[in-house]
Length: 329
Image 1 (cartoon, rainbow, N blue to C red):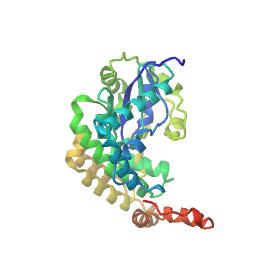
Image 2: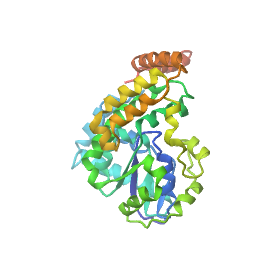
Image 3: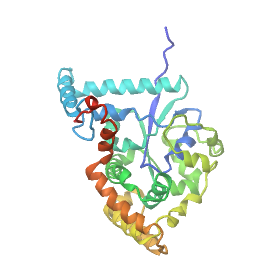
Image 4: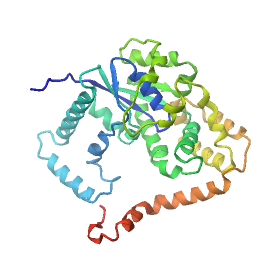
């Protein structure tokens, strides 16, 4: 019989993409009692299985959701039994991935912001860490990393809007029972920022992890290849990098509107002052760089979000196999 592995306690690191989560993951993962891999994404399809929208599939998701809902009604505790089995299944996978080592398994999957409330309900024994970063830095990092400087934020709207709203709502609800890391403070004073996190995890804090985290290798296709490649140690270089990216009138106007959408209360919850951020944004000297491409990118992005031409493109690529073309439900 295979050796039975001990069950690990899950740690969930919640943040937006490009918020510095890979850095925090590698620092925490350098502790002997914390095991982690790149980004599992394992909970998304199973929790979305009972959601009405957000999925388009060949098998017709809405019908599958209706059928699964009916199926759950046959269980003694209904949907609670589904979530209980999902919980045990996920813990088993975490434990197998850890291969018997560690006390905690750290799951860092940025898109978990879409299911953050459900994760709290699913793992009452879990540990939850929220990571906040200046939204202007996040936007700039998205443009720089995934857009090569071009305006392609339409691909990240679900993160910037739905994701941020979910994170703020859930953090406000559970703030007395979670750990929190501010990215800027982490870069300036890592010991001060990390000690409370290790206290929250009931683990000893050893300052050597701030030098050893570079040895943590995250296998897998997901994660942050740029930060891992460019920074072998904690650096304050990223703090003001956004000022050289959000420096034309279109970007400044869009970012101001985004800050106003987030609002004073949510920004304060995250540890930021809306007036200070807008002031810093206004102080950046404007340049004409990317003006035309940004104007096109914003218009093009709005069209893509409505029409989703990538789905049409995939159908056109399969047009020769007409019998394999299906409606997605």
